[in-house]
Length: 518
Ligand code: XMP
Image (cartoon, rainbow, N blue to C red):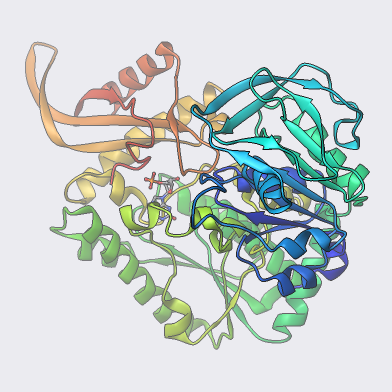
């Protein structure tokens, strides 16, 4: 996709493997400047061709002193493009330009106070003694020629350096994390005072550009889109519909593993409110039939994934002749970055998406959000008038409730889980906590426990409640929900859901737990 005019003022972020590289990109985009993350191994020719207004060298877990350290081309510093090195990036600048980096006996990790020493455009309007977030081992013992120290902390005499003539800057701390109180100001100074960028990455102009791009790419061809009810595919459907109208067909496959009321909500939103061509396929018997007798989590996922592809192929063939398959793929999924190479989630659980479909059906892919972060997709959706109810949705996994029913998935067990899950969602919403939680849901355990109701012994199911906070689902913390709310869950579920006599709360973070139980 090309949104060329919006891309004229772009920043290149070279990734050396820091866990914060995506934060840098999000911060730059929040300041309405377009940027892209590329691996630090990007060739010098490609870097030149990128034509950036500024280059940011990210942090990284390694040491520039290691034998096989990730380096960058020395010629980068002769491009006359402003450069900002963060943490590892700053040590790299020093190392390559003839300064000296020494190994440190102890790591400096956590908060520090930044003392400003010299005037620098990088620190305009930044407060003296502001808090910064450090995370480094090595330190600089000799600066390269032309550089000077512009700030220090208790432990780092060279917490920030610059060569104002060459417009090369280095920060030992991380301006891109929330704990660095003036971090946004510092990054903005780099973008606007040093790189002279314009704020032109705006969602309203982006909608128009994207619509035009989709029209150019698709022409009169037909597009099929698998609607899941989640944020990404929903916003993609609305955007593509704005571009090509009735040449878009959406398929919503009810796999029988949805939350209570989900199917009706999707149907009314898209068909009634947005007048989008929508086919709702009830394939629940097929999915549940194939799941019969399966208890292994991976087998469940594979069964659901395969059935989805089978049903989708069959139904879309019935609907017409399609050239494109639309997907809500996001930028984090396509970044070929050092830190994400072989990320652990891929091997821990096989994620269910429409993988395999495009090749099988010989469809071209239409992925309008390949350059966007999830927060940007949300802004885009709001910009197009989509209701908060869809935009702020908590994520819901493709294999649905099947991976929240431990053991065999049967209609009876689905009914129990749906009823308990509905209560949890209602109470979370009533407590005003829905938007602040990444996810909140019920899990049905494969054991029964003894209880007493009235004067009689019971031997019934256990429901576990899972509620987590997270920014990207990669790591998560269990939500510290009020005791009163936990009490309400327990009372209502045990009283209202037939067959449950015990409710427990999951207090595991990720890692070591995962968010879903299977
Ligand atoms: P885990 O359980 O791996 O989940 O900590 C991380 C996030 O991913 C969601 N999830 C999935 N989403 N297909 C999806 O579309 C899947 O197969 C799948 N498995 C987990 C999960 O809900 C959480 O937000």
